[in-house]
Length: 261
Image (cartoon, rainbow, N blue to C red; front, top):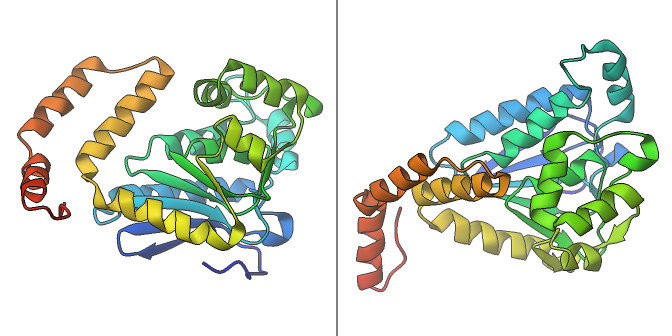
């Protein structure tokens, strides 16, 4: 994956086999997201969701950082122009929530630092593999910004109350080892093995049963938010017991081979 692009551009989508990669592509500005990037990300998420041959999504950045977050000038401009019913961060929140709810499993390839709103963008992915030189920083308290509700919820449900308070209320930067300790990173690796570890996890996910994974991911997210649709989860379980995936899985197990879903 190239980290040498100089020209600023909206996020780009690359598809290779069962794997899609979305790359934030404003390296001169540490991949800071602009207002126009949000609609493009939603479009790319829709393309990934509707492509039946895509089994896993990797989200990463170009250059030395994953992302410096959402452009603060855009936040300020929206704050004075939107109605009371529409928060300044609502457009960004919609993008992050959409990423969290994607049916395919998602991996954030943290090629460097992650700051501001992009800490939540990465947290919305199912897995985060980061380089050992990465750092994260949530500056909301320094900026006088009350963060949007779903973002706080993700921090609390994934990292715990104490870690969420520490990151939001102190606005202190933490290093990759600490990101790993609190559970923000799934794995921390040297830069030279980042692609190898991402590839390894992506291949595992791409080889598992897509319908079963999609349903279990939905149930896990709903459990975390305290809004499980019990009837739908039970129905997905019953359907899986007589579906094609379990038949192939049992066959492959008996024949001592990898399943072909």
